[in-house]
Length: 216
Ligand code: DX5
Ligand code: ZN
Image (cartoon, protein in one colour):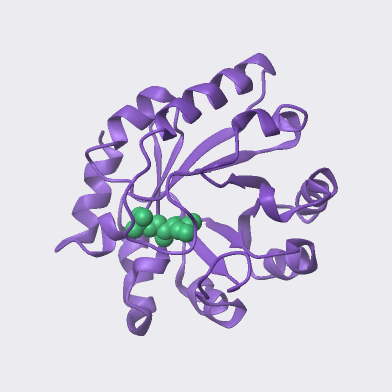
C-alpha cells in the first residue's frame, strides 16, 4: 500500500481556506492534517473549533486532527461532532492514556498518540495494542517550517518493530519537516502517513508537491 499524504492546514492561507481545502480535495492527498494548539502544551496558538468547522464544510477527505493541548479529554466528543476521523492526543499531555484512547474510539474515531522528540518509543510498549496511529514528531511541536530531527529514522524503525512484535495494525505517521529529501528513508523505515505543511503550501504548485510525495 502506498504512503498516505496529509497536508497540514497550519501552513495554508487562512484567508483562503476554501480554496486550499478544494486544492487538497482535487489532489493526491489522503487526509487533511489539522493542528490544534492551546498556547499551554505548546508555545503557540493555532485555531480552534469554529475554524475546523469551516474547513469541514469543504473537506472531502478524512480529517486527521492533532491535538497539542493539555487535558484533551475535555474535547473528545466535540471533535467527534466536528467530523474528525482520526483524533491524536499527546502522550505527554495524558495522565490516563488508556482511558483517553478508549473514549476516542467509543466516539467512532481512530485513536492516535503523538510523541514529542524526547519521548522514547518504549513508553508505548504497554499500550501499543490500543493505538490506531502513532504520530512521531520529527520537530518540536508548535510551529511549522522547522528542520527535521535526524534521529526520527531510528524511532520509526523501533516503532515498526514494536508494532510487528504485537501484531498490531497501528499506523506510523511522521509530522514535521517532511520533504522529498527525507520521505523515501521514512517510508523505508516503516512510515505509513507523511504530514507535510511547508513543503506543500510554500510550493509554487502545492498539488504537484503532494503528487511528488505520494509517488515516492
Ligand atoms: C507542528 C505541527 C505540524 C506542522 C508541520 O507542531 O504538528 O503538523 O504543521 O509543518 P511542516 O511540514 O512545515 O514542518
Ligand atoms: Zn501536526
